[in-house]
Image (cartoon, rainbow, N blue to C red; front, side):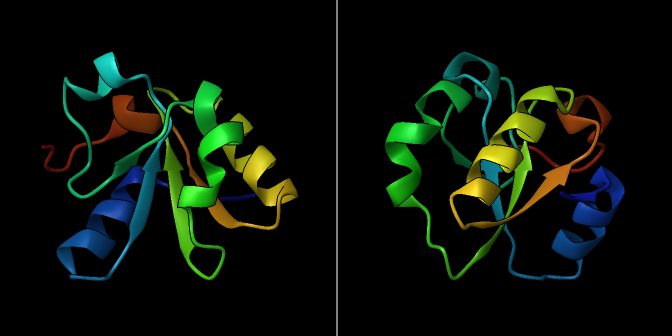
Length: 98
């Protein structure tokens, strides 16, 4: 499983790289702030909503601390998606939120 640090994600965003970020936290958690432009599909719904994702894109999977994003990354990887886990989750995110 590929992983990336929150600081690396922030650098890529600040460099205007096009990133596809998948936040697997619950909707209530996301209301407290998410990475700008992140798509929210709670982990428990991922199996049913994965068709909303494009297999030709790379996704960075995010949660609060890294546990759920690890599970989501492993699941999506097994389904043929190109995914990277953001280690440490939003607890370690220092960048902008929306």
